[in-house]
Image (tube, rainbow, N blue to C red; front, top):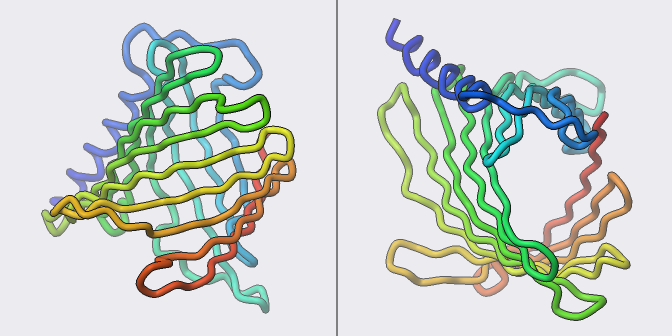
Length: 221
């Protein structure tokens, strides 16, 4: 019975994000009410996210996410989080050369009682006619409802230079510790080809450098 209480509270909170009061739904193609987004996250792993969205002063969305992973032979591995509940709320401001945005997100794994809360801000501007810049700052907290504990907040900030013509970007990411010390945690390059994104980076370049390669493909309809 005790485990059902956090599950119900998380589900109710996510539903309230979308239902709210006096919802106003947009009719544009990119703001359709239903979310249906399968994606391939690895060589043999897939993720399927679905839910609903509403627009207004704050754009909100909520739903569930199903993950699946398999071996090379095709045997499905038992996922640690087969179904997760999620919700987001975001808003943007500014036009033209400078734009700003804010976002709050939450997700909950009822199987393990683990939840994540995140909040972040982003600012982008046009540096030259062929180059854009972006700065992101975020905070993330992980909690476990069954164990009644939360991890220390994780503060992250990143800067990105983007070439809109070639869709190539250079990213530098750093983390801030409790004593305020900031260190570079990742330097990488990304290239987008439609729904396909390729990335190569060096993680922890100052202390224990190691290479990281990302390949992501997403499909939305």
